[in-house]
Length: 192
Image (cartoon, rainbow, N blue to C red; front, side, top):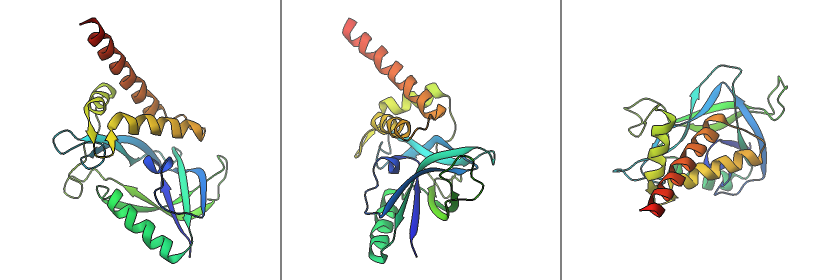
């Protein structure tokens, strides 16, 4: 049995495990939001970064990303071990239908695994939740963790999504706000 994993964040541009096939497509009924705190990759416990999670949305709403097919049993185990460490702050796994054609009514693949960071504060201590674009952007500008600056995660996600033809308004709006803050702070430091 092949295992499929859906990526909607850093997995879109960096799998980190071997796979047999990568398909670009979407899942339905979810939206991508920067509501998860990252204290292990893109931030620290003192200054958490923000990474994406999924929240339930209108059944017609779609979230684009990439699905990875892993066929060999040992490759599946290696991938799962890698993902359990990488996604350890994501407390939920869901199995979803994955589509590659916008008008398709039948999924390309069913039972695709996806990691979700739930808003349940008991199960997910790093959940930060909704905030204004300005507040999220300020937090992203300041945060940096072992995997690098939080803004790099945002910019790489924006680029990876545009490469697959997805214009995610939440991601683009946030990236533009972070660029605005950075250019303002640059002009302040040049003038002082």
